[in-house]
Length: 233
Image (cartoon, rainbow, N blue to C red; front, side, top):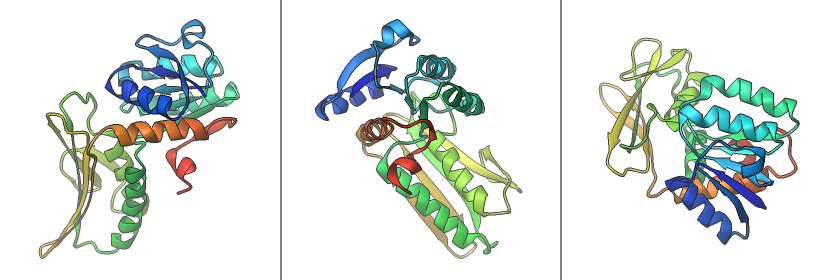
């Protein structure tokens, strides 16, 4: 494939390296807004930037008929509009709050556990995420996905919130520490015990590989997708 990297920071460079090792060609390494000219006619664009510019980056790619794999979090209030643009332009859009294979299995495990625990009201639910100090959004997109998986199954909650769980709001504690790729934990605590599931990333390589695999998968497709579609979960 010919791939445009939109956002050539730490993640963009790892993605480019992995993509080239898998036989793909990087035709653009962008640190500015993509245009028809600087995209250089790719088969797909992989977008990892920041919440302030993600919407315009994705919109520009889609309007130029370029499928987009997006791993930027913190802008999801505009996601329905992006999905509409993808459909109108007969192209494809895939958003992942986390592209790691392990995390996507963790999402499925989280939903299974929340379904098991929904009737045991003596257990208090809490989420925690730890990331590097350079991460601009809090809570992480991965933590939000975990919260949404719990809310879907547990009628005690109708929304998530940053900080401790309170009444019908499922809490997410966000911690920032130096050079932590990402750790996510879900706790079920009672007065007598605790159940915990946890995912710890050792590097960014797993996220980058998943994004490239998603880019390979989306070829020839139209519509809006997620990593569940890619992995058949």
